[in-house]
Length: 292
Image (cartoon, rainbow, N blue to C red):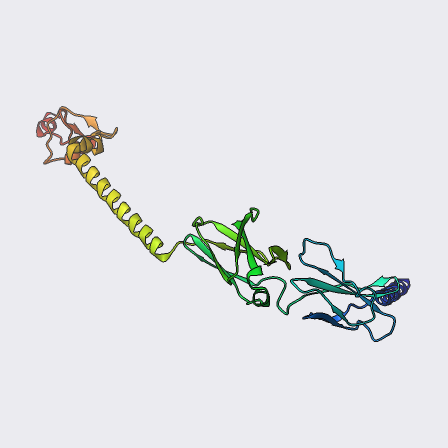
């Protein structure tokens, strides 16, 4: 019973704390969008909530307040022209909501990137055509950073087109790429996610390698066979003697001075020089029986 009361008390305490936290947390602005001005929807349907709009031209910079858009009750704010990122915060007394970020254009603040690898090169595709390119022309570029996987992306390339080819890459190595926007020679927005790809060999190169390995293996095998044949031909006598087993009789055989021949005994029982026969198989001469 005491255990059940403890559980109920703990649950009630958590519920009260959650309600207090929810009341203390101010809702963020909704539907933040940017065109010629910044627009948003109110955070809550109650009076007294004010809004502050800030901007920056790069994620490396600090946020700056937009003049005339600090602690305002309006839901719109005029901003300067150019490549900018904005964020809107709701404020009520000492409470401040979480900020909601948006770009000046409807496109993402980060490029969408796809990679295609070929022998010795890597093609970087910027998937989405960005309105920044249309609006700022020669003042807009893609900043392509790349390097080997696991290393810092130190190499920088710039292009105003949606396709950039990186050449002279090592086959078999893995390279990573990250792209961000650049306006008026200044970074804009946030970098894309880092994409990595291995540089593969072309099918033609792979086929050449297979043919080269096959030809080399065939030549080595032919040389080995010819060399082995010549060695056997020149040393066949020594090889034959080496492979011949020793001619030695078993221990249960004894020497006999009686004549025997291979016609009467197993030829394997006869050795060179001295005739050796099994005692059980020796013939008994008729003369011996007559003497007995």
